[in-house]
Image (cartoon, rainbow, N blue to C red; front, side, top):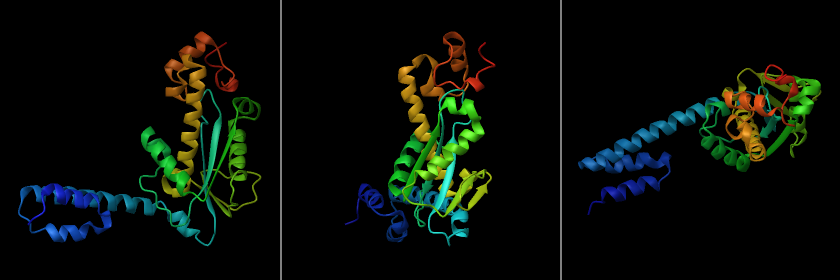
Amino acid sequence: MSKSIKEIKEEFEQTPWDKWHILFGQYENDERAGVKKVLETYRRKEEKEERERSRVEKMCVYEKKHQSFTHICGIDEVGRGPLAGPVVAAAVILPKDARILYINDSKKLSEKKRDELYDIIMDTATAVGIGMRSPQRIDEINILNATYEAMQDAVANLKVHPDLLLNDAVTIPEIDIPQVPIIKGDEKSISIAAASIIAKVTRDRLMKEYDSLLPQYGFASNKGYGSREHIEALKQYGPTPIHRRSFIGHFIR
């Protein structure tokens, strides 16, 4: 007796995608229109899966190039441009065989997808380190130097010592570890992309906490960036302790 279309669909759902070819062969001669539709649907899903795996594999090019190193660490930061809140850096060491689907530059992902990937990265990573610098420190030494300090802390906070750093575009001063700066590294390196996501989600969650204390500024939605709502609130209510004084001179007297 032939399986029902529902049973065939459930069989695909319960089978790993790389074994679907067995099911395609098993049902390709079934003339039922519903079965043909199921096979077409899962062939498209298979193609999508293969494209995504190929894309992620290309993001491992720098990790493969430097595979002689034991612990390769990706580093990225978030929050250089906002008017309020800290700059946050993350350092992530992934296992060499890690292939995290849909990972990408955090700016290219939805908040929901970033949150999903954050959990996967935290579960997968060999080590994760976070560093941040306050608005006061940013005002004191400027945003670039504050970013370097946050990155230095992120590396120092790793529980596993890295022997190579892959950085998004910069070379971090005062670190005695080989470094490879990569332009648009969060798009080209799985390790840097992972760091980008960890830094972004960490900072966004912090800004949401600030929003509960200072709701008039809209920090939950603007994350401290200079949205119209934020600037209008800044003019009406004045700066808060988490505003960067060196960034807001154009908006308040």
